[in-house]
Length: 284
Ligand code: G3H
Ligand code: ZN
Image (cartoon, rainbow, N blue to C red; front, side, top):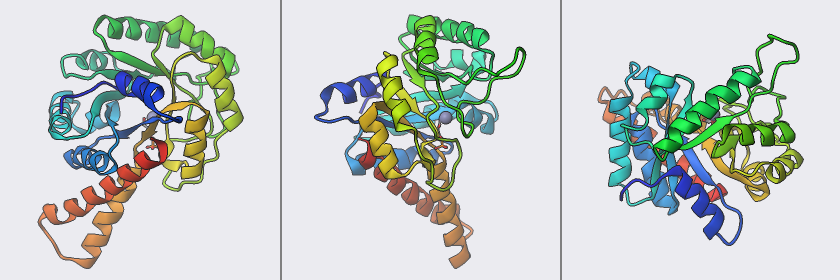
């Protein structure tokens, strides 16, 4: 099926469903991740976003082209509705490569910059994206308390997005979606995060664009359901796939003396596909 865009999926999910649903986005590192996301989406009968982060591009020697082309080809060969998203980009050269590689959306991450610089850089990224039909997500990190102090990562434990500041940031930058800090933390391997549901509701009231939850691997199913019901529109999942992948490979190699990677990568891919399907059934 031809690629769809993240914007279409997010708007479609909000418009077409009887109850609140979100779009789940999963991180691609290897070809098996992409295949597993497609397989999981087909099994669950839900659309999904395949997202490639700047860190994943670094892992592939700084070359976006090969991993993007392979991921897009897997998505086009699937019967599921799948979108291609470039995630957590702060390198402007990489941002500009998104268009020729066929990405329909990017997350431009200037959250480590002081507020004024974040707004300026993000507004420029949004202008660039909108001239090319690209949906732009951004993240608002918390501004440090003192002049010259670096802002905190929005997903550091304890950090929260202020609704009034978030509304001003969206107005000043023109972003299409906003990642907010409401209690999740990147790279959790246990699902123990507790979200601030009252804050999600206040953000939903204050911010006129879809809200994005990052670090969703560490969020329990019921917390995810409540977050979606309160208005979270895009749910980003990465580490949970890697946890499933690594556990499957470890179990296989503990039990077998295989040297052909296809044997253990097949079990890793199936484990990731199960994880994808499970998250999709929870949030959409
Ligand atoms: O942007 C990607 C997500 O925030 C993934 O976070 O690896 O903690 O699930 P996670
Ligand atoms: Zn993230």
